[in-house]
Length: 81
Image (cartoon, rainbow, N blue to C red; front, top):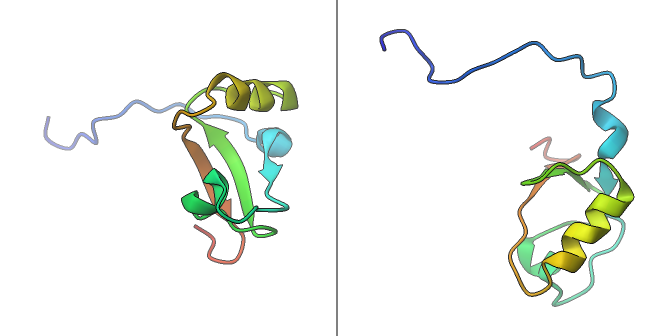
């Protein structure tokens, strides 16, 4: 379609958007997190391929996917990316 972005959107109130963000405090050498390039103190996990509404959801996702690839969306405070 001409002039179409090929997406659907809706307005969302983001006042609670920062409630489910995890700050990366430590990255162990040779760990999956290190291999993925996570950076301690400047990276924040802001989402995943599934809804993470609580710490329990985050921990369950990791436990249920031992040995599998898990996709996280990460924001870096220094690069703002």
